[in-house]
Image 1 (cartoon, rainbow, N blue to C red):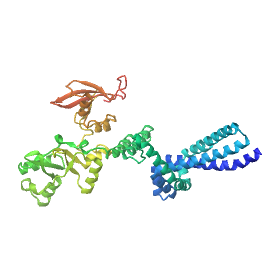
Image 2: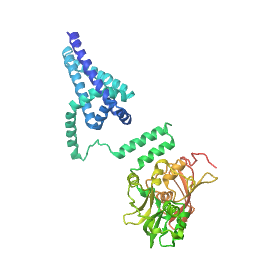
Image 3: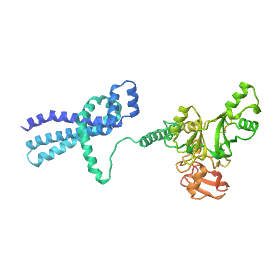
Image 4: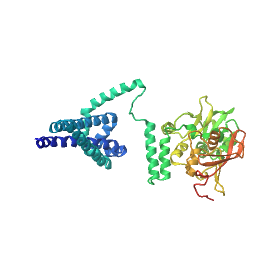
Length: 435
């Protein structure tokens, strides 16, 4: 009798455990599969990958449906086993036996085994099980949504708002973390790591963080004699020169050096004969809170590479160019007139003499340091932020594993610093001296 009952139970139990194992494998494969790889397969015409991507588009419903169906199968298998063993072994013995047997079978064959196989090749398993998973989501999806609604309503009085919608910043941080991991493993080179990080930073950084500050902007008085104005513009080495009238904040336009050269070439005229007013282009003013990604799109749309950055009061803060934004991705774009890193000089003792106006991001890129750039744009600003005061000449500070010494100060501005290479916890250099 007992043998007959167990023989009847075995096929049904195998089927239910098999279904549960497939569902567990699908859950692991769907969540572990590379989204980038799946999208690439979909672009190549893989229909299974397309099904996976559609289901992952509503990940909350998909996971809820899979978990719900898996619980239904496992509970059904446990109930069936208990009903049979309770008859075969009356009393608590049958319940205990059922609990032990089903725990071992579900954990080993319904969870660990299929999930281990799925995690080794998630893309292959996910695509293979995409059709049965699709129908599981179709059948159990509405029930899963109902269960999630009940959970949200239960937690709402406690101030907990559940949402699995993808956050852009979180996605960026996930990508950044993957890049950092592969860099530590030696798969991604330092240059590629910085480039990928620069692309992600475009949507987080304002133009004020990469612009050329107004103190460093070359501008000319539009009312000075024509010959002097054009000669100064040609000798400046800049391709575009802002022109002001009455005071430097009143920028009336931008003089493009190509327009001057074209005028001289086409009409064979000298500097005295050129009418500057006819060559002045209308200035393009950009709010200092504009994100780099938006400004890059604006540059491409307007086919203009030069903008004047202003604050909320309309005061000139600096200039932003297409090159400034591209340098955030690829690093410094040097030409025959540029130095590798302007304002950074390696000293014979291994320290670096750095102008206070050098940006933290440029310094990190040039020397492969990791100084924080979220509290200050320039290295002088970082020192002031950390010191919580404007240091005097000769003062020395140690923070972020570097020693900072103030060597020049003009009024309330730090103009020169000496910075040591990276230090360890005991104050020893982590990189060999160069020089």
